[in-house]
Image (cartoon, rainbow, N blue to C red):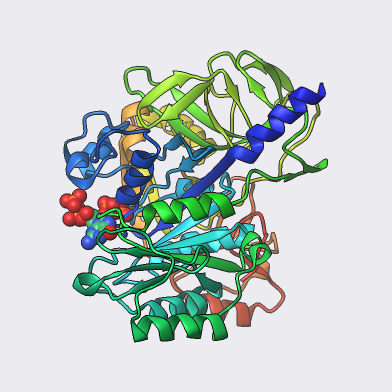
Length: 515
Ligand code: G4P
């Protein structure tokens, strides 16, 4: 590559920040996202991001089910420019019935913002999403929201992050008071006082004894700021504020963008691939069908890992070993789409998918390489399904096959009765979306029985005879004929592990972690 081209590629990479917000429903993700977009000038008034009230009457939702449930099922990628940075915010569905898509989106992020409700602390969904970030060792930045209301004390919240998540903390902001007594934030890195609700910024904090004591304690007993520990995902910088009244958010955003990493190398079967090379490459992390019901289209989302993407470029689809021209790449901002001309590492491209793509596929322009497969996520809910109309047998199996390939569902079959079909999901909504799509896209109504299992464990043996099973659990096989035990509770899991000392019980088929 000519050196000017390399330089402009490097400059584009350095400017990019690709991240996701992890939170429990109602922590304020929509409100925070809206404020970030307002700063960036990407939207012009509050309320343009689907707020709860708007969601109820939204007409542009991708799927009718979203309207029915009043929630946003599908993730979008929000792109905006701010302070010299090009930001890609991967939106993770926030409803408590989140799905595997939510997890997979995190595999495309370079960092995460953990949003916590000050009155609630770490909640269940935040913890699950945090664990995925932890596995990837990406930097995590914490924003403690709703400081305009009474909540837990800042020390209690920090302690909870340390003890529940095992993360070290560095409070960048320190609040004085909260709720109706909230008086402002001290920025420990910039040594700047920001009074609440408003007023000029000052270099010195107000002479309040409790603030002085807290700051002294943090300086003496707290973790020092260590950028490399942040980069390794071991130390989380902590910020306080209120997304609703837009306090502390801009200061958080400025620090976050300066500290968060630009896109880095990614592991492939040919070794780590640096982003600043001529070879364009990327991987598919999400496939979404019916984004536009008028067109019945299917779109694959690709995260660019290396090189510069240019519209109409021809790339190699490594798994299919064929060349494809990417002539209609899409930039996706919520419902609006525009043709994309160029993209750089960290960017997300929407590709029309005539059925070529699977989750985890690699596209590459010059070298044949495959990125490490995306982790699989253990289903937590199980449903046995039947076709109610036997005339639809073919459509049923086609739908099952296509939706499983798309990553919308995990399919299991009985070990002795292969006609028994059991489906695994991460959340109830994932099943509802599946059921809706079987009906609307394949014309198949399902008979269904919800099963009492909560855990799936892939076994290190292939023979059914070598497993001693307990009452209430069941053996099935996944689509690659691997043996899987479905278990009702953790107690059964521990009991079985004791009874079968020679078997390893993996939580997913890719066996990247054991129980
Ligand atoms: P989510 O996307 O994480 O689910 O949360 P969302 O932003 O929809 O916020 C959930 C509720 O919390 C909303 O109230 C929102 O106004 C409120 N909220 C968000 N940030 C703050 C904050 O900093 N302080 C306070 N006090 N409240 C905050 P709602 O009444 O459930 O919905 P709405 O009718 O206001 O949309």
